[in-house]
Image (cartoon, rainbow, N blue to C red; front, top):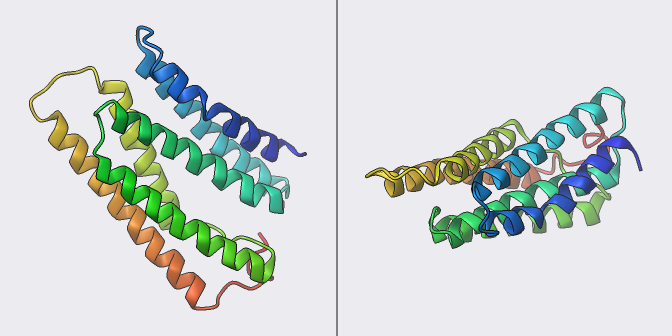
Length: 185
């Protein structure tokens, strides 16, 4: 197993730490959980950089990396929903969006034994979603009049970008642009 895949596996193993810490009752537990989320995001950036720079891209990595990212993001979102800091509809929307993408990737994987690469809008939507979740976790203890409205608007923006990325992804799948030669990085 190469370094990028090991980083993705470590990120996957860190997923259960977030709710354990977040709901532990420790002082500053939300901020500690946010730091775990930040560290996981940093390893995501690092593993992608290392994989591309040293040509260490593998089929396992193209499956493990997005799986770890999606599980971590969904876990954080569920924590925020349970704690009352994110709307339930956000979790439902993310679940269905990821289910659609997962099914699409599975269909493509069965056809060409590979998964489609992410697009720039997908990366942007992931960054915005991460930022919203991270900031809500860090600042959830601050009471202000419009906290719920601001959180809801932030999640709506993040999800709008996610849905736009999904539409581009679906269009990519239906245009038949996924061939073995195009999926090699």
